[in-house]
Length: 208
Image (cartoon, rainbow, N blue to C red; front, top):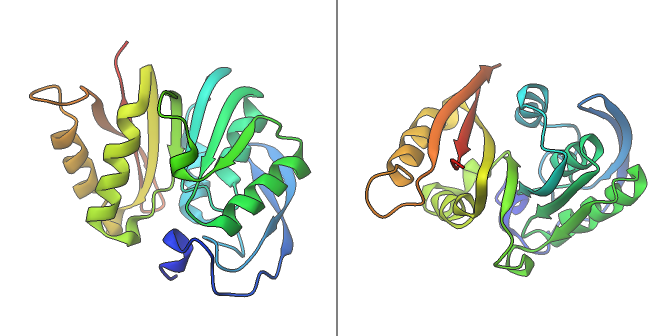
C-alpha cells in the first residue's frame, strides 16, 4: 500500500482496468477497478466491516463518502437509499473516474464523484461513511476530520472504520477532545459504535 492510493492526483501506475464482482449490503454488482486506487483488487476488509455493521442510511438528504476510491461505500449508500444525494470525494482523479463509471454501471444515479474543493461549502451531510486514509499520517488525517465532520447536519451521523492496530482508539480519543461540547467546538458526540475483525467503527453525531 503506497501514498499513491490516497493523495496522488494522477497515479503513475498504468490505468489497466479490470472488473470484479462485489456484494454491497446485499446488492451484488460488477464494478471496474484499476491500479493506483485504494484496494484495487478486492473490497477492502475495513470497508466490508463498515458496510456489514453500519446502520441503515437515511432515505433522503445528503451523504458523503470521504476517500471514495473506486466507490464501494458511495455505491452502497446510493443503492440502499436511492433518495440520497451521495457525494463521493477523493483527490485521486482515476478513483473519481472509476466511481463515476461504477455508478453508471450499477444504476446508482444519486452519486456525484467530486474533488474535495468542488463540493459546495454550503452542503451539509445527513450521513458520512468513510474508511479514512489512516496511512497519510495524523496531521493530514486530522485536517480531513476538521474539514468534513463539522459539516454534519443536525441529527447527522458519521461512521468511520479504522483498524485497531492503526490507531482506532487514539483517533477516538482525539475526536472526542477535538469535538467535545466544551470550548470552541461544533459540539459533536463521539463514541465507539461497534467492533469486528480488529476494526473499530467510530460514530460521530451532531445532536438535533
